Amino acid sequence: MAHALRRAAVTKIKPWLSDEAWQRLRGLGSAARIGAPEPTPQQLRRERLAAMDLTELATEFRTDKWGIHRYTPHYQRHLEWLRDERFTLLEIGIGGYARERQGGASLRMWKHFFPQAQIVGLDIEDKSFVDQRRIRTYQGSQVDEGLLRRVVEEAEDLRVVIDDGSHRPEHIRETFRVLFPLLPAGGIYAIEDTQTSYWPEWGGSEDLHDPATTMGLVKDLLDGLNFEEYVDEAYAPSYTDLNVVGVHAYHNLVVIEKGDNREGTNRRSVLRKRYESAAGS
Image 1 (cartoon, rainbow, N blue to C red):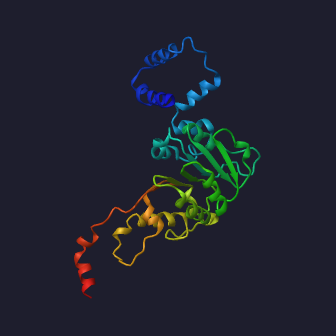
Image 2: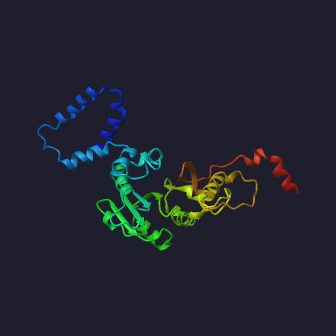
Image 3: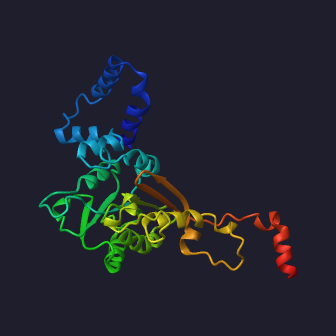
């Protein structure tokens, strides 16, 4: 709660005050601690990090989710509501490739953005050096279905999956096939670096309508959002048709929302002549 109040002060009050007034207000907070032990450097650092937005945290921990990419404002928009919740976030791809003791920047960023959450990372390389309180890593392939299911089984209330793994469309599609059904309603599934859909060297295709790419998957999800409007009465909705309620596409990033996608339709009343003709034939 204290973290949330500090963040609210920084984001809602500070912009309206002069620097002098803000420093006086901060001094009042410090005065309230008179008689209490001086905060340690670690406590001061935690307070500073707690007041940061996601882009500031990305800069602090040097993750390319801001800088090379522009992902953090989009993540802030879609995940802010979870900031003080207790849940698990799984990120596939920890970074650093095979370089010794390299990687883990985004896991640390997520840890401080979500102060109550468990952060889990999966990588083909051994990244166990990243493990610490509220960060746990697994080693293995993102298309190892048994491993993926074990990670989910061992997680506490998995609500967010971020695929920043191999970036190869065939891996992205298989990981989504396994993990998306394991998310609860209200879960968020993000896919990063979708630019590889257009790069044959990374398993993508120059054919913009190639159904086997990552963006081919995304385009199918967009159609599936509207499956109740299909005029084919024999169409059987897929799992994603029934359980994807939002698809948000940004440059090289897609955010998918899970929920019950059965809102109903007025298709038969609006297209009455079509269905009357079909019934009479």
